[in-house]
Length: 150
Image (tube, rainbow, N blue to C red; front, side):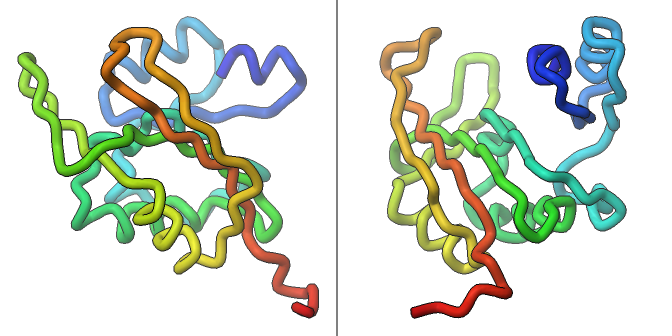
């Protein structure tokens, strides 16, 4: 967030953990909303871009579309999204009890298409923390509703 701000972007963070939200505020001096993706009302925001790096990795598969739809309310018509999720099948439970939901590219591509999002760029990257983890990154943009399709 601070890196983006220092590059001239206006930034607002969101975290459901009060301690992490406060840490982000102290480190950046920027606003951080304390809320969760499922219940927060995103309709009052109109952002040029959404950056969700690992942000939805704990959202269960069966809730993903509902949560993602809620978040999309914050995106302007021609807005851009960067979202990263872990590649794999099913779930992974870490020794600390955290559950990670794993995805296949085709499944996510279908969901994004259902929301009229076009994938501008896709890449995979091995985790710097755990070499057994692969992160999928999607740069998405809403289809232009005013452009006529060929």
